[in-house]
Length: 191
Image (tube, rainbow, N blue to C red; front, side):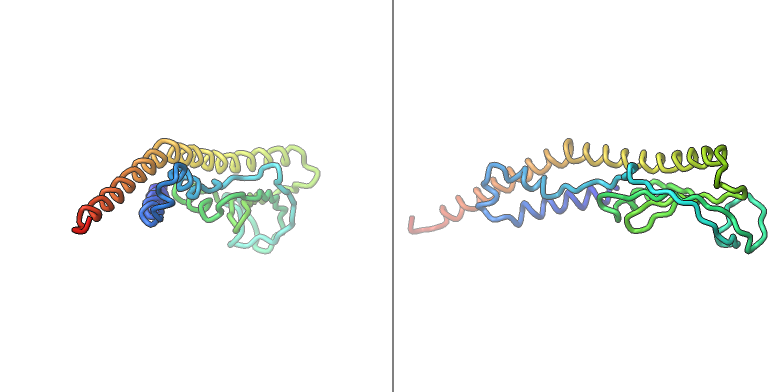
């Protein structure tokens, strides 16, 4: 995520350098630059999780690891679908950058899907249902923990690194422009 934070810093400097003199002199300019760079971190809407049980024909492409099966065999599969809020492209980067791997989790545009096939019938099998629920909860919570960790880094970056850097850059740009303006006035031979 260092690349993302570096890009945010570069965008901040660009906004400061390309601002008008009038904008730059505003008391709240540094804060407005900071606020313009903020975005909503990706998160999971766990309360909106939907579940389903589907029957699928198992092939070599979709078979769960570690089971024996006959190609074309029907198997019940439990699905848990959790909506993703915030920047979904960033969600994918966070997961990939943390080398998160789980063969039962899939990411589609704005949702996270947990898929668990079972060689036993899921329907009306309370013990299996509890086991699958716990597996899904553990996998989805692992993703939630990664997102929370990123959000903490993001908040720390904005508060402790970017904000002071923007304030310093605004002050330097003000000084540079004031110095240039004073020099131009001195340069005028008719004053």
